[in-house]
Length: 130
Image 1: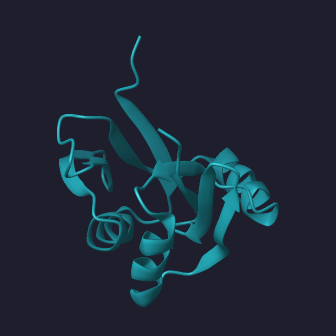
Image 2: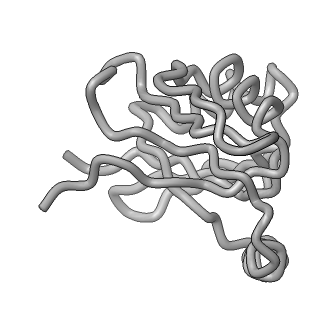
C-alpha cells in the first residue's frame, strides 16, 4: 500500500493553483475539467514530479465548511508539508505576503510553522529529523 494522492479542500481552484505554484513552489501535474466548473487539479513537488500528488479539491460539500472552520478556529493545520529549513521558508514566504498563524517553533528535533493558504486552510511546514 502506498500513498499516491492526498487532497486539501479549496474555496477557489484557480486561486489555489496560483498560491500552491507561485508561492509554495509546487508544479501543476493534472488539470482536467470535471463537470461545469470543477477540475481534477493536482500539483506535485518539482523535486519529485512522479511523486505524491496533492489534489486541490473543490470545497463544495456542505460538511467541508464546518470541518475547516472548526480546525481553523482551534488553530489545527489541515495538512503538513516537509521543508529542509522552516525558518528559511518562513522568511521567504513572509516576504511574499503569506500570513502565518504560528511562527517557527522548535519542539525538540522538529521545527514547525503554520500559515494560511488563502484558500480556507491552515497548513503546517515542518523540518523533521532524518
